[in-house]
Image (cartoon, rainbow, N blue to C red; front, side, top):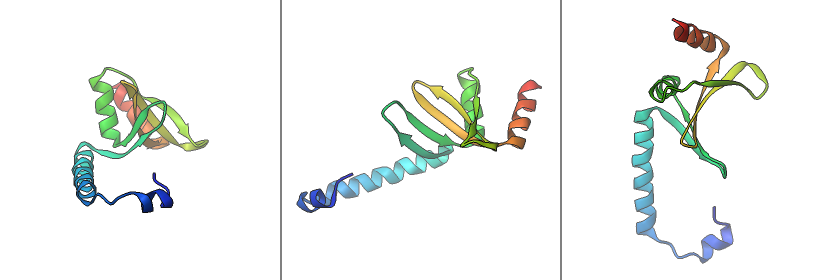
Length: 107
């Protein structure tokens, strides 16, 4: 992100900015349609917060398993994760949802 001084010295590219906003709007619409809530980027890998059903479908598609990790030392909220091609997909599960998922997988 640019600092205020850099923003003041940078020439305003109105056409480029409008194009970026329109592109982002299209991407956000696609994300919504796929069930992706948010996307993050780090030095190690990218990640996406997705709907539970999408996470489960991804796990089935790649014949992988979802790892469940307690969220921020909270014993009632868990983060279900799966990594595909160095992209981490995750969804939040309550303990009850985690139990239902485990029962569904067992059947």
